[in-house]
Image (tube, rainbow, N blue to C red; front, side):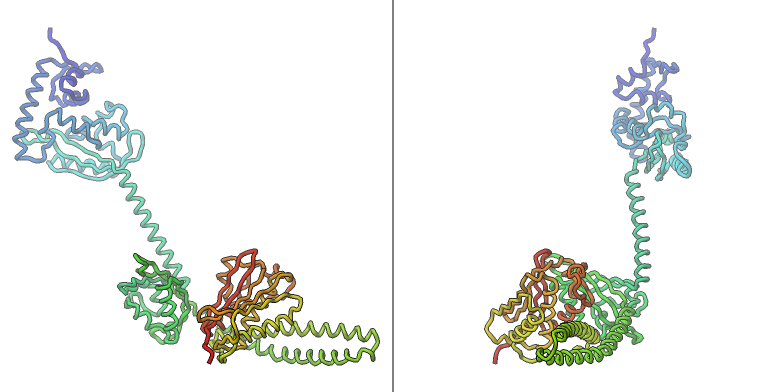
Length: 577
């Protein structure tokens, strides 16, 4: 009686998976009697014939390898062939020439989420693909059947519906006679790579859309951007920026000097100083300037930028914007002209009112000098009238200072503020202002500290510097408790004289300190802090800063919330002659 081998017996003797044995049986390379669901029955003679045939094929294939390089799989021994397939992370399939699935490696079954490969053996491999990918699979098979290598990239989900992208290569397996025996389809899962490509495309699309929106926004807001390679002196302008200089797209020549020549001659020194401070001192580049278009028209621009540094703080490049502020400047000019005109118109009646009040006050005081001639009721009325006149004069003084502030701000904007610079004793100026403020607020404690011997000489407009000290002191008295003293200090620091006014008020936040010197700026909540006191115009500190800067000095503030503030300014000293 013949002894028969099972699929498992053959697999064990060849040390290959049982699936490979079944593949050989289906391909009729190994003869066996099918037993339905029970598997196959293989005689020892059939098994030995298979072994001899495989050895002959391998020997002949190795010789044929030198003549045909595309028959790789047939030249390998079954054991080595199977081990290579088993160890591959790719999905490797063996197809017949019609594309029917004969075999799939375990890694491929796992990737495709196939639990029972037997259910797939009757399927045509292209049917696993959808839509246009199915056509690609048929084309790849056709190329491989003609002896070529078919490749494509396609999408198809796994058996459980997991979406996957694949890179596919279909190659032929040749017989000894050069005919094609089977096809091998290798599919590599590139889903992560494809997803990254999709996300990159989406990001690129989003970036393009964002860039388009930015360009539209810049056009609408009249804003253009630039980038300046400082070491190479290469300046890149956006088309929006070129339009702000009256140039067509691509009309800017790309050098720093090409930009400077378009700036109004009166603004060049100022803007270059600001730019150099931004580059070498790390200060903010923020300046308003005029440019001249090719047609000769004048336009106002606002420039802002930031410098980026490399090793050893070497400036590398600057990125910034220009904004067209011509319309705003025109409105400001009209406003300043109106303020100037209105201030002048108001000054005449205020002067008349003040003179009339002063005359009335003198007459009342003269009458009060003869109190014995009048009744008690008359003397009481004269006293009330004197109080009312003093109060009215103080209010006239307040209004007069407001008008003067408006006029000064208008002159500053029009660049018509003049100074009468003379050598003067700064100590004397400060003493006079302190004495004046003490008379205005007799109930307040004002401490004067002059830490240097007289004279402390500076080249200054004494009235204007007195105006600065007076403004500092007025603010200190206004915004600090009445029981707290005001400290006025004068001392020298190297070649500078330093005047400071310290109070014990509510103090200023860091954000407020950054804006306190701006024109028309008022501290948020300051009205509530000073209760019923008179509000200002937000011009005092702006004028003070301008006056001190035009004297070649500097201004500043040191403040802490809940502790108080110290406002200071410095002026260059001159030697006594």
